[in-house]
Image (cartoon, rainbow, N blue to C red):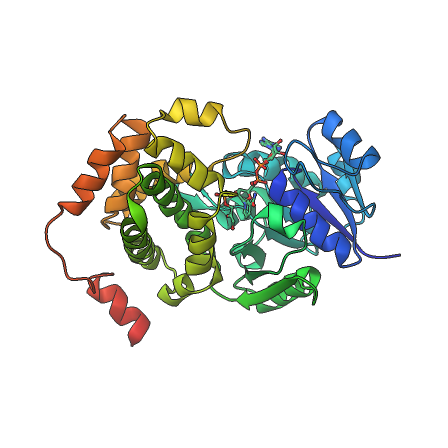
Amino acid sequence: MSEKVTVLVAGSWGTALASVLADNGLQVTIWARSEEQVAEINQQHTNTKYLPDAVLSTQITATSDLAAAMDGTKAVVIVAPSKAMRQVCSDLKPYYHPDMLCIHATKGFETKTLKRMSTVISEELDCLESDVVVLSGPSHAEEVVKRLPTTVVVASHNAKAAAAAQSLFMNEEYFRVYTNLDLVGVELAGALKNIIALGAGMVDGLGFGDNAKAALLTRGLAEMVRVGSEMGANPLTFSGLAGIGDLMVTASSQHSRNWRAGYMLGQGKSLDEVMASMNMVVEGVRTTEAARDISLKYNVQMPIAEQLYHVLFEQSDPRTAVETLMGRNPKNEMEVMKLETWQQWHS
Ligand SMILES: NC(=O)C1=CN([C@@H]2O[C@H](COP(=O)(O)OP(=O)(O)OC[C@H]3O[C@@H](n4cnc5c(N)ncnc54)[C@H](O)[C@@H]3O)[C@@H](O)[C@H]2O)C=CC1
Ligand SMILES: O=C(CO)COP(=O)(O)O
């Protein structure tokens, strides 16, 4: 009998990761809230609301009973939207045991506390943050379920836990997994890139062209490195799969919900109109909200996030936002991070 892995919850990314695990020969149980979705996964082997074209492996079963989902499992993979992470982990606590490998694949912050997802998980599950693994990188669910070649990174302070996650997910056919010890950097890169992806969509929606898009992505990466390194990330992590890799995929693909939301904003839609037209999570909206407090707390400038905040929450005109960015004081390109932070990583 193959080993059992449990995936929480049945959104597009949870379902795609469940498919990888099933392809790797594991017995996969998805926990979903909706009985309708449970019946669809078990009987039709589809999840049409989130992945309309995918046919799932018969190795995947679903249940709405969390105790049954967790019974006898070797590893739990948590893929809840960031706003639901604390609640989902609190529900999970009675069934979680520290011997289980705990992996999450969520890209966002808890907005009220500005905590990273592994902190929220460790608080709710009463486990060590250093034992949590994050899986991140350029990986649209729609392509993963089609088994198109994809690379991701799994990061943990605990090298054994990262290696265990790597061997669970990696296959030679289409899913290549790297390890990294910089949990903080990988989590921050995955969350922060969504702000820049929203901005990239907005630039495209405005019809501003390739020069503007390249500028936004490059200066967006500088902004991610600046704030990320103040929050404890290794700046080099941002050149990896979770940073530049995910920025490229999210800012250039029509699969990206963040890019699509930004595009509609650029075309003059309001945030309410945009959100009403999407039936899936757009993490960059909440992350842009969190970025304003992060910028104040860590005393770092985040000019792109700040302008997006004005567009999203204060009805600023996207065109004015871009003009404001263009009209900032002259700068030296290399002023990416504070001198003390630079010295800390280069001593
Ligand atoms: N879709 C993708 O290609 C990728 C998504 N991600 C990340 O994965 C996370 C989840 O995103 P998706 O799966 O795409 O979202 P989604 O919008 O496809 O699905 C969200 C799922 O969460 C469930 N949910 C919402 N609130 C809940 C609660 N309180 N309790 C239990 N379940 C709840 C919904 O019923 C739904 O099944 C996000 O942080 C996203 O950034 C990361 C990489 C790729
Ligand atoms: O993170 C992702 C791909 O790596 C998915 O991005 P979106 O949430 O913008 O669809």
